[in-house]
Length: 328
Image 1: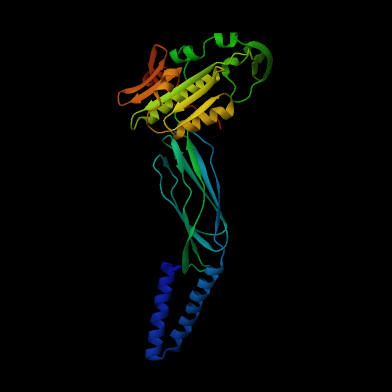
Image 2: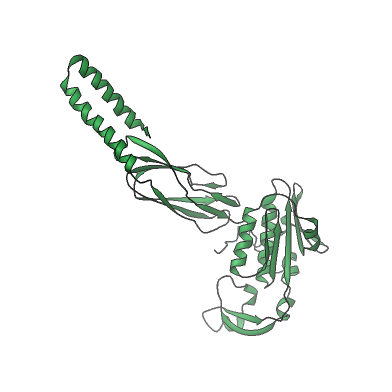
């Protein structure tokens, strides 16, 4: 425990009043000093007996660079607490330096600027007595994580990458099963436009499995400070493959995701790409991969068999250079 600035001022006044009262016999000074001294002692006792505050954090939904979100921290307990969160590189608006009376909920709007996984939970909180004279540092185990997915690009059907991964033969290799209403995340290429035009809802064609599983394996490597470009190329490639109804497997320097498909698998792919840094993947993985992505100071290459595309070509052919909103 230690005195706050207010507590130091009170303690200094009490000491001065005691000295002056002792030298000059001023009862008025002692009458003021005594209650302040009692307040210091009472505040110390109350803070000693008080339970440490607790934090309940709420992780915001993952997003992409350029999107904003709210951070929320609920502080439970009694008394006064000071919480400090410094500004974090890669996001703006997350700085918190507030002294509040508990219980209290802190909210801040932040903007994502760069791919990554940001741990924003405070390590300590300064808890104060009821009058703010005495304080102590309390260790806090708060887990507040902000995930920023890599930027992806919406490519037209005539794009070379889309033609290679989402060719018209994909649906032809499956047997039509039924029509159902569109659900967010369904491949847009499976919309049955003729049936959709007759009603208010989009209708999706579902296909029965032909027993043949098509898997696209993506391997990504990046030189130092080039991981963002590799992640963007890998995320765009994975999105196209998933929308085409293919199974996607991913291997990057700091993680891998087994073959799969669907909404949860998509989140796992993007989360892995949000976390990965620079580095290389094993040569055997590169040799067996369907899509090989390499990023260095000269640019980002996407190799599919004998064809080589670049990230700049993807950006140039994108219908919009804005980041595509990633549904949680």
